[in-house]
Image 1 (tube, one colour):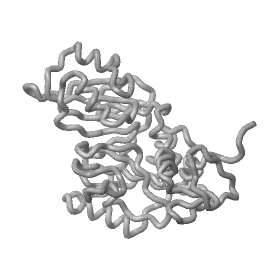
Image 2: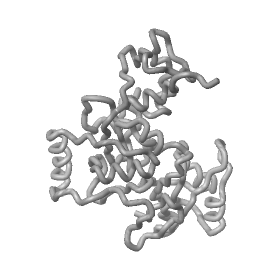
Image 3: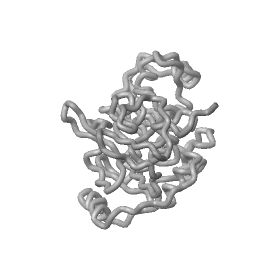
Image 4: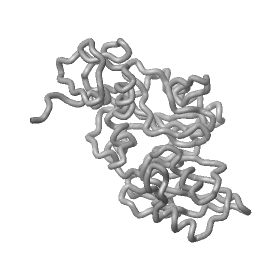
Length: 301
């Protein structure tokens, strides 16, 4: 007989507290209570349960509107909300929310730059990160070492790492001279340091790494490191389609938040109106770009 109620981490994610994975970690860390007792992983709740996180009551009401940000992460920022070493975090520059919190879609390590998505919808974040979604992540990587066709073949066929077999689904030569060479690579998962570990397995050293695309979202050239832009209704709808979820209404930024976003551009010397779209439809390609072959692929950026 099936247990009554829904999994606690799913309820918390739907309420916009965080992604399911993040909520699982919070439950294991003892930060979540149900009806006055400490919750444990595997608990289920119904609509009458009193849930609290860090002593604060949580409403089970589903987030009825969503927001999504695209952030261009510079090297030297961590992807946690707070850092014990006092380093800058990717959350520091994001606009404040009256309700809910920003949930990162995946992570980038300290020395990696590039595209990060943030949303207020935990279910969307979970769907975009889940391995079963088969959503491509594309990186621009500078590699030091000898790379021949046999190396490329091994990396695309599969290499055994400490956490299982991993591979690039596509590798495209990006040019360069000498032993330092650029490549565009695509992976379908978000394992810790996966791109770096794959190259290291071939005795190559990654000297620079930047994520340029997540699914059908790429970094617009005008969004420089340390800047963010809010995705519009059409762009967010494209993400829900990519995640195979019904779209939710969009909660617009406040006037002050819009001004703040515009000031970022003005500081960079670009005060022109925003061009449409950091999101391409699945299967669409940038002119002259190479297609990777997967139905959820979008071309090189």
